[in-house]
Length: 274
Image (cartoon, rainbow, N blue to C red):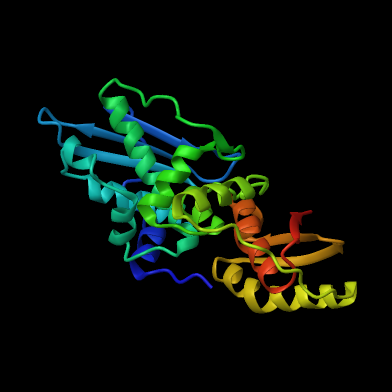
C-alpha cells in the first residue's frame, strides 16, 4: 500500500501555481496523455535571470500533481543557474518523500525544467543519445545507465519506478536486466520453475492476491480492480473508480498489479485490461 506524506497530500489537494504563463520566457513539456502523465512548465524571469513567476499544467496522478506543484514553489526566486541544480531527488525530499513506485513523477518535473531552461536560452535539448530500449516511453540505454548509476538501482521494477522504462508492454525487460547486469556487475539470475498448479488453484491464488496485496492500495487512491478471466498465463482484469480514468492506468497494471501477481502466483503471468 502506498503511503503519502502530509506534504504530498497538501500539494495534491491544494496545488500551487496552476496554469500557463502566456508570455513565458521558458516553456518545457514532457510526457504525453496517450502514454500516461504529461507536464507543461512555464516560467518568467526578470533582468537578473531570477524566476519571478512559474506555473504548471499536469495530467496525471496525485504524485504527478504534487511533484509539479512542489517544483514551482521551489523555483520561485531562484536564478536560472540555481534552478539548473534542482534534481528529482530535491523535489521528492521537498515533499517529504515519495513512494518508490511514484518516483518517476519527480523525474518528469526535472525533465520539464531542463526543457524550459533550454527553451529560455534558445538552445533546445539535443536529440537523445543511444539506442531506444523502451519503445513505449522512448527511453534509451544511456538514460537507463544514468538512472542505474545515479540512484543505485538494481532491479527492473526500480528502473520503471524512476524513468518508466519497462512500464508498458514489458518487451524491454530482458534488455533492461542486461543493462543492470552490466552496470552493477550482477550475474544473470537463474529462474527456478514454480510448482505446477491446477487452473482452479491458480485462479484462487490470483483472487487472494488481488484482495490482500492489490485492492487495498488501489482503494487508497479511489480505485478498484475486478478479475474477469484467466486464460493460461493471461490474466484479464477490469479497473474501476479513479483507476479506470487514470492516465497512468497501464503503468499501474504492469508495474504494480502484474508485478504482485508474478511475485505471489506465477512469474509468467501477463495482465491485460478488458
